[in-house]
Amino acid sequence: MRTQNQFSNELGQNEPVSKRSELDQKFIAAVDRLGRALRVARQEVATGLQVSLLQLQILEHLLRLGPRRVGLLAAELDVTPPTVSDAIAALQNKGIVDRHPDPDDGRATLVALTKKGDRLAAEADRALAGGIESDRVDSEQDQATALRVVLSEIHRMQQAGVISINRSCLSCSHYQPPANSGPGRCLLLRTDLTNADLRVDCPDHELAP
Ligand code: SF4
Image (cartoon, rainbow, N blue to C red):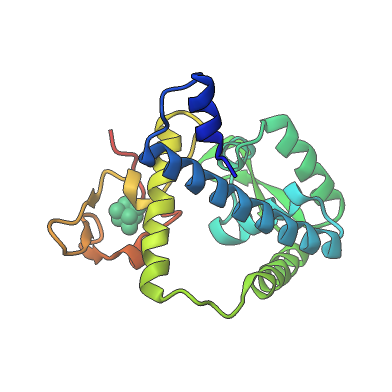
């Protein structure tokens, strides 16, 4: 069977696609497939808890990162503030989240999990972990390398303006990339960072210029 590239070449429509861009396309297709699989797993958990997919993401986010303002939550989840406000209002009606005054700014409020929300978010976390876990065939080292590759793609997408917030080591001003074959280093925490140690969402992250 002829590939898409061969068709294009025969028709003279495109320059030959390089090995590198072919690999890029395969990588994006694989990550996209993984994203869809995770979405299915999340949807199942959301349905079980009787919340929407976005509401579930808000629960996971608040559990992991603590109370935050609506604007920040919207930016972190890459949705508009009105969309996130609607989801928060629905969660508030169910007694899952609450709003408190922001101690740093009396005019602003923070969205936080209630006790019921805490329980629900922990339940969602367990259900998601259970749904995703399987007998892995790849080694821990392979996983760590994959983590680095995915984080560098996320960094690339942030630089291209596709996503607005990325708090991983590879985009952090405190990150010192590995020299030779050694680990990288966090200059703030003064610790070595192997691929497996790279953080996805670090509270100490500062965007590199
Ligand atoms: S501050 Fe956090 S994100 Fe930045 S390099 Fe250190 S561990 Fe990574």
